[in-house]
Image 1 (cartoon, one colour):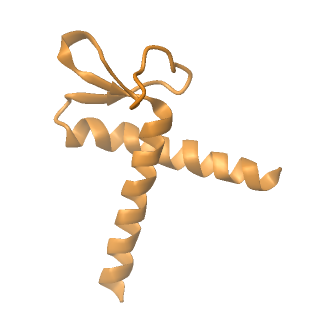
Image 2 (spheres, helix red, strand yellow):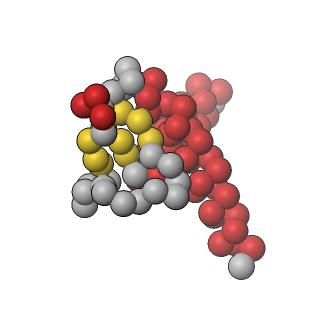
Length: 82
């Protein structure tokens, strides 16, 4: 039970938060991350088009992207200090 809570904290707390900050910045505002409670209207790939021609990523998929970014950053830091 505690392990599941910790994994949820890592997934949603770190991954989702990083994705909410990095994805719009990296895409120059063309892609944004959806809210954690809204999962309707997304395609099977986790994307949907919103007003103004922009794309929105589902929160679960965005959390995965955020964790990949965190792991890449951690690997770069560990490589540089080694």
